[in-house]
Length: 259
Image (tube, rainbow, N blue to C red; front, top):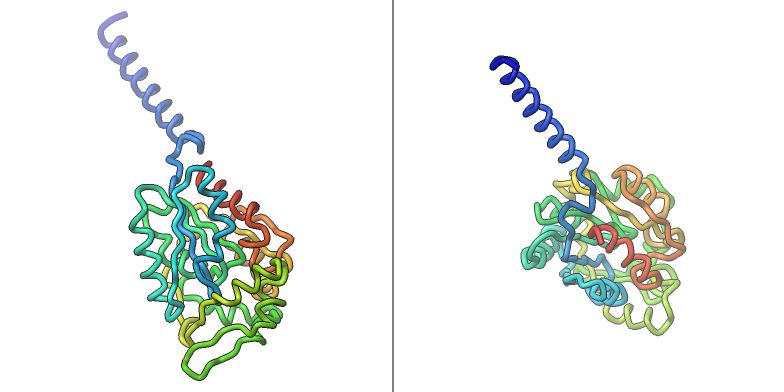
């Protein structure tokens, strides 16, 4: 082989090797990607961080570092700041899991590079700038909203009847009663906020629809899950599936971590 042919062969060989390496990189299997070792849980309206207490042990048993945010429920912006503070404490890849109203928080702060996946549990998931109230109005109104009681101080909560029968209808009575006692009262301004981000457009997303939900219309949940192209499961549960179907919810979050 003359010198020119040898040089051409080396060049072609190097190009082929580079192309092969690029192909191998593009075809890297999901299990070769970094796995999340942290989970941040965000609660919705009429609740506090303790509503995740049935899910947390399953996650911790898998060796995950778990933190549950305590939202003030005054404004969306303030709740996002509280969630960001908790997220900032996480060291490395983190899954953000949200229930109900806090889906808006996940959509807003989930653009953080630390967040590797989003999990929505019977949660709101408006697009950036979208009026969620107008979106929800396109579906039959769920019965829980009729039980909202305003206190005259700018805050409101669900009546005991609405909480037990429409918010936590498939939760054991004693547990439902305890959750009612610690429910977070919401400000009149809370639902006026709109997200400026839609993290679900860029991050792997998972959604658990509650088929018997009496707080968010299940068909609205299905619409949002489909729109975000989420990996979706349907649970035979009411709105508080994070309590009544804690194992199934935990399994979805674990899947989102890559575990």
